[in-house]
Amino acid sequence: MRSIQEINEKIKKKEAVVITKEELLALAEEKSSRQLLEEIDVVTTATFGPMCSSGIYFNIGHTSPKIKLGGGKVTLNNVPAYAAFAAADLFLGASALPEDGPRNSVYPGKFSYGGGHIIEDLVAGKDIVLEAFTYGTDCYPRRSLQSYVNIKDLNEANLFNIRNAYQNYNVAVNSSSRIIYTYMGMLRPEFGNATFSSAGCLSPLLCDPYFRHIGIGTRLFLGGGVGYVVWWGTQFNASPPRSDKGVPQEAGGSIAVIGDLKQMSKEFIRGASIQGYGVSLAVGIGVALPLTDEETLKYLLVKDEDIYAPVVDYAYDYPNRREKVLAKVSYRDLKSGRIILKGKEIPASSFSSLRKARQIMKELKEWIKEGRFLLTEKVGDFPRTGHAPRPFKERPL
Amino acid sequence: MITKRIVLRFPKEMVDRAVVWRLAKDFNLEFNILKAEVSPAEEGILVLELKGKDDDYQRGVDYLKKSGVKIQLLSEDIVLDHQHCVDCGLCVALCPTQALRYDSESLQVEFFQEKCLACGICIGVCPYKAITISF
Image (cartoon, rainbow over all chains, first blue to last red; front, side, top):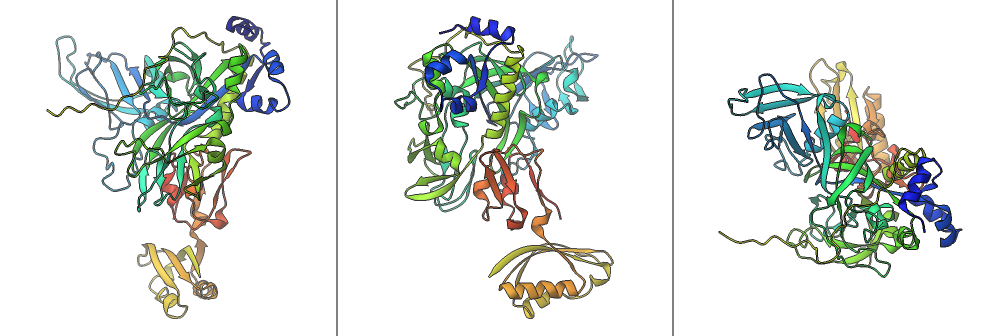
């Protein structure tokens, strides 16, 4: 047993023993739980993949004469931004698309540029074209603005993602007789392939399945910089079906996170074009878990073979909100590239980059070893029970 | 039977000569024109998919080469840019010839050009536009 404060004291003295989740699983082959608990202070976990509910807000500073963007129309590289805050604040979501783009009219659409790419371009230090048209007031007389903007000139630019790092997620297949293009990628007919999108046992929220450590206020690695958990993610499910070991067997919980975009790097913030579907943002998230007690270690030792994901048909069941699970497959099988479905072996591939997850775990480990990143005690809990996503309640007019 | 996608480059002086029709007539090769940029007095580029018996294919290609046409496999124009690739591996399961493979040690995607048919599926599927074709 050790407290987070004790661990932080060791981190400050650069004496903390920090390992990655992969290293923990390797060590667990030769050492007992007791030894692991005694010797290790912190374990880093990570995930990297497209997370559509991501966005940025930023402040451009005041022009002369002043302009009121709030209530006007604003585009960034021809992609509409949300201009409904005060005069100089804007929001841009990862899935935003140019108004005159082809979308899916030439099917399957390429979605070569959108919100996610603008976020990546800003992070990369590229100039972005801002165009604004609005109404004039006595205090904000200017009605239009066309200018380059650059992240270095923005007052604040923050990544603010309302649903990231899902605990677990569907495996997508296609039961129909034609190719379909989904947010889970291209799916071949007659269950020709399967796609998945979790880092499995490396994924932070699967290593703390009951949110004993992760909660409101948790400091984390976000896109190459330091960020924080601000809330639970939208569509949060506090009581997903769980295995004997407590592992959520479907999407489960997620987190809302915030961080300074100016600290982030293109290595871990990437615009994504999903064929036939739209634009997204791939985000790298890393969480360092303090090895405070036996229970923490027990959950941290979860392996890919312990984690099962539901296989869902994206041709009929998913679009029609029929909650049917065709099968359950383990991440050990998914990561091997082949799964067995209906007695047939089919190829499986991933949206989640394990190479990036490994890179993030190592980078976060270095931050902690160098005393640059302290762990946090959460300041608020996520909902524990009774909080589950409900379907839309449609009430015809 | 063999199916290959190849790029043909015709030098200026050959552009007005009828060549490709012989692939069908003399070598029983089925050809499908994927791209053609042929204009008088300029180098011409033709991208073909050829289908036929192995030895017919070989004889047909030899004939083209003897005629002065430069030939290269279309897959040589396909590039996996490791700077852009995040190694998710989404493309790997969709590649019909296993020209894209995932190394579970290095956690990286590898491209084996000699196996590539240049079908182009991976180009559309890659969320990061890390695979490109130029011809």
